Image 1 (tube, helix red, strand yellow):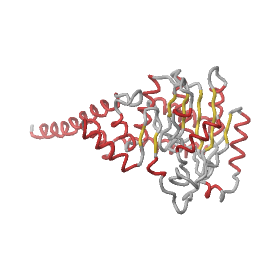
Image 2 (tube, rainbow, N blue to C red):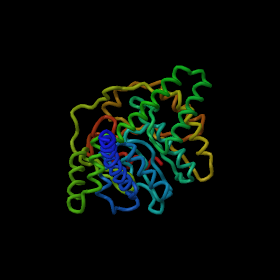
Image 3 (cartoon, rainbow, N blue to C red):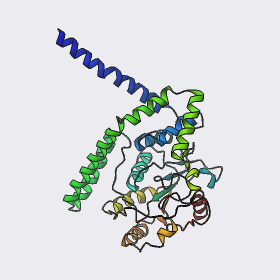
Length: 336
């Protein structure tokens, strides 16, 4: 009898906090963070949460509010905002921190399935020296993610890429493991509790502290401002660990984009993200560039070269691969 009571207490000890956490998590993600500024302060917490959480609330907005123009990418494109587009066109920035080109294509596929894809689609492709389009981001239900890895594996096997199909599957398992780890990360749990329990004036102070700590403000159009990071020019800039591109999936993804691009009322533009000028001058032309632009021509996709955005006057580059928001916006406005 004593053993049963002890077992019951152990079960309750796990069940009660888990149920409370699930309720708090659900309550936080049921809110609409981008339709207006009602939850401006709470929106700032997503700077501190894992990218999967940021992706979830952006997708929730997208499935409820179809927009005319959408930006897809990562932290290098998240500074693009509505101001550079026509006022009579609705806009949303779907960029997610740490996202890859593959993840952008996955999100575009998802919205296409739900008939919520913007008419004008602008995709950021990381500069050839830093890009790595092989990572997965935990978007949508596990059923869809499993289907995607099945399609990817079948694609590789047809090309006799047996070794890489195993490596890619292990990458997928690793990504899913990271998502699970992030879900129960103590910092994430703490921030979700703060989002749920912090109220009124204290919430305003907390959001201002987040802005001070991270130098970022998130807006209702899905974009961010990083003005605090752009005030001072660094003495030196450099890419710490250049990565060789993996193009095994790129043509596969271009086929998907091309199919969507051919649909009525859809237009896709891809732009290559810029590099800080002093670093850009040191780079040699990569063979990967030729592969990329060959695919652009083959699948009739408009692809824009990386712009040369000067760093002599403010706003300055916060690092070698993240352009100042204002300068990137000005260039894109003229480019499209």
